[in-house]
Length: 251
Image 1 (spheres, one colour):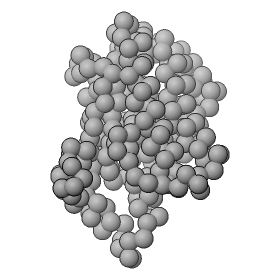
Image 2: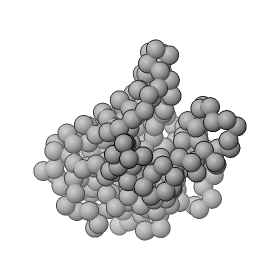
Image 3: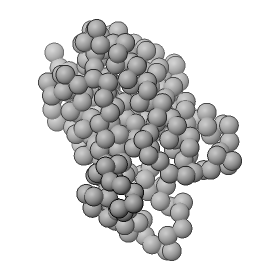
């Protein structure tokens, strides 16, 4: 029987590339997103246009996968919301929105899909961020939620280890996605184009570039596929072009 993966936030930059990588490796791909996107690569076999943070959504998808496949080989918790504001300007509603989408949704999917993942002796990959380790001003809600994902990943990995379920996190750095572009549009860059801003940002990293969604997707696939990372669990894979490895005094 084919292996099946569920990707949340599947029409985001990283989410869609993740779907493509799994599909190219012979997996059945189920995806969830709030918005319909263009599946130009025919990478998604089952799409659910729903809110990942709602219990009803998770239960609906869980019933579908259980009835059709009876198992889930990999869960990729990728959906996320970012609010770029100071603490003083971040409203309670915005704070709750970030945590609802970035950590509550992860909890809901892991809890509801647990039995299906157990049936497959599968894996879970949570998409965190380098902001969990080193961050910027005016992004506190996002950074805090991504840090929570790491703690949740470690705890879940320990809890599920005796069932053979592996749980890991990927921590992307700056990646050329709509989320990064939206963040750069908020700054004052003296009339520079977005592409120029991204180029300048990339030149600050040891790798000399920002990452591509495909590069992060391949990291997710590595952690999600039991054939490639069978002895890896409870870990945080940083994919940031070497930024966290470099002393800030040397930049």
